[in-house]
Length: 357
Image (cartoon, rainbow, N blue to C red; front, side, top):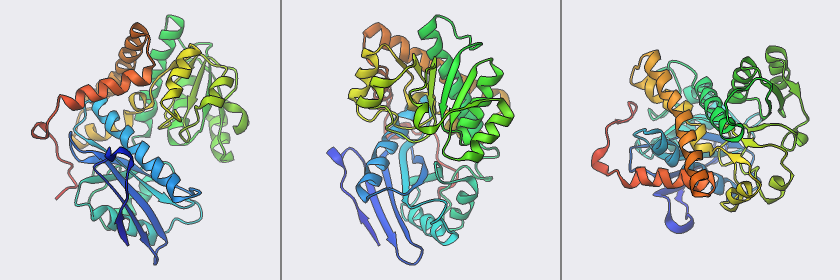
């Protein structure tokens, strides 16, 4: 069963929900903006307490994807999908194929990719019922997670330079919340740069792997957000920076891979009031989608590396503007992204996703 879902302020172009009794699928696809090209964004699977929570996540995540692609100069729009369910218990091939049929019903206006709770292997199953998939062999030869982590690492260094006057990480302390695909690689980059890394994860195997490979110091999940550190790197779920948590932070820089780290727009001002440097998530975590695009274009390793390097400069520019204008960094990042969107028209599209008919 497929039906349209209302969205706040009619900001999104299309929001659709489906339920499939045979497979157990309940999912939402939110297309925020396709002005720059087809909407591209990951599929999150999570046991949301209620449908409204899933809808809010899809709306926020898809908006962030629009801004992410715009800031990175990519010819993509912003979209996102969410599956309501526990990925460890409810995920089946039948459910994933039903998700592919759902994606296919949008005729290429949305291209799906992995996200929290899904994997490249899941995308291969989804690709059995739709061509509108990325992050798998036909569109992406390599896992984009290390590229996302590298972009976060470079943006983090920009935040460190803003806070401390130089970007040297030797001796700096970093607390990573979440050691999944991206958090794990970020821990590796930070450890190699001489930082002391503390980290938490609800998955004990992830924590043990990072401890063995990089010598990270484990911290209980309920304590990591307020651990004393120079840099906090949220790499798990979003909306973790709110009025309550910000008041308890013991860090000077926030730079992580998680999407939608701010619970509300007001939290940008709260961080600024505490003189905490915030690297906006959709600016700093664009490495994965940048690398996917470069791989799709058969770019050389040098070209791919240069594209990721620009993320660090983008973050540095945003932080500098925020400091000069005495505004929150998130507000500046949104304004820059909106400027790029407003400068573009439908006729300026230069790329069509290879999976589209």
